[in-house]
Length: 61
Image 1 (cartoon, rainbow, N blue to C red):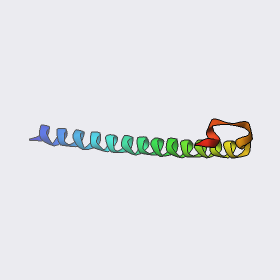
Image 2: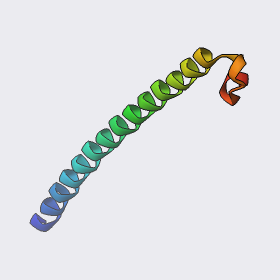
Image 3: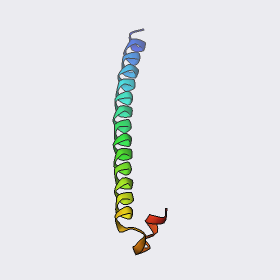
Image 4: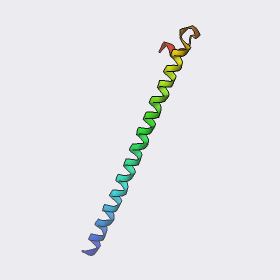
């Protein structure tokens, strides 16, 4: 019976570790998405500044 209790505690501890890791990954994914959004805005701004006179491909999109 004591073994089952110890095992349950181990499983509970592992579940907490997995949950914490999932939160870390979620934060990383969110940060990457924010970075991508900022980057795409920079490209859009660049394309607008270049204007149609340069014939830049991004401007036409």
